[in-house]
Length: 423
Image 1 (tube, rainbow, N blue to C red):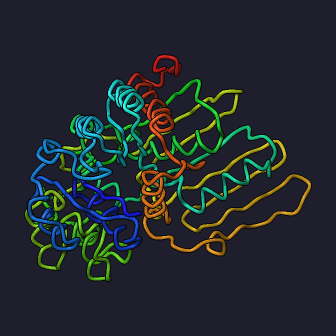
Image 2: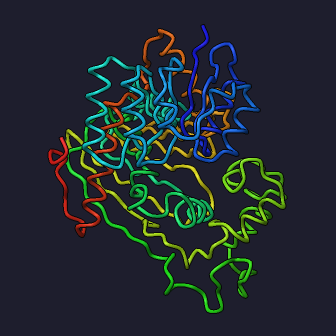
Image 3: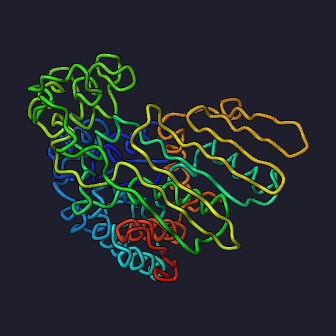
């Protein structure tokens, strides 16, 4: 059975991540309508997926003003637009794949949960890490008691220096008043993982952090407003030409034609990227932008039953991925997502390693989570039952509450926030 889909928002997630799933399982998924405010992106989607001209729209509002066009809608617009687009789509009769965060506003999160329940709609939130082979194996180990009862977790989100510059200094999520706080946008993934892995709700939250580096007063002497005009760019790791053209991990000239390059141009070429760097937002000096989100933050969480967790999110890392240390009554686990390795250290027993690459295949797109998320959602819309990893609105709202509490605590000087303030 093929499920028809309308995609609202053709950014990095909608156009470059979820839409290609039609090619991964064409017997299950057919894109029949798209909407975006940028005509170039709409035209690319039309050409790539054979969408009829009359099913291509210049905004989500325009698409949602029409009678229901598909079985499901993918909501992939900016954070502050999710609520309005999701509400309208639910009321039109669409089941939803909803990009995280649900909304930057706690009341809007609650309202969407209530609307979806009242209307009987199926909604999955894009917490893609739940769908990775890595975290599914970690969940299995904990549920089977491999290290006894969990008492504490240490979890690090390695943002990566160039990712911070791209997304949270120069990019779409640089300013919390325009989008959402970074701890919500980036780390509701991590809050969701903690809740899911532990099987417990949070009780208290405390947080500290701020914007340390990317401020005008920290700019190197001789720096300019734009990278192309800068006298000290040769020694700057944040130089835009390095990130988008010559960096071994991200540069177009090193063979990287997808994210982050396709954010500057949906179909990048060297000249398009050079033009974007010279004239667009991604060529600005990282010390001279209009950013206000944090570049480092720590969150302390007490869960039900006295279990504790500490989350650290930091821009100043060279490699990405997550590192997780789980401390149990009968052993500990050291889990490294970037290496796809889980090390189990039972007390009084032999240590052993689990290489996730030997258990599964397909690790592209958030360690394999992107395509698995979309396929499971399509199966659920087609009549399948939600699984243990399915991220419903109820599950995701819990992770959002923790992020909201963490940001409130940080802004209020580290005050301990009771989760009852949100529930």
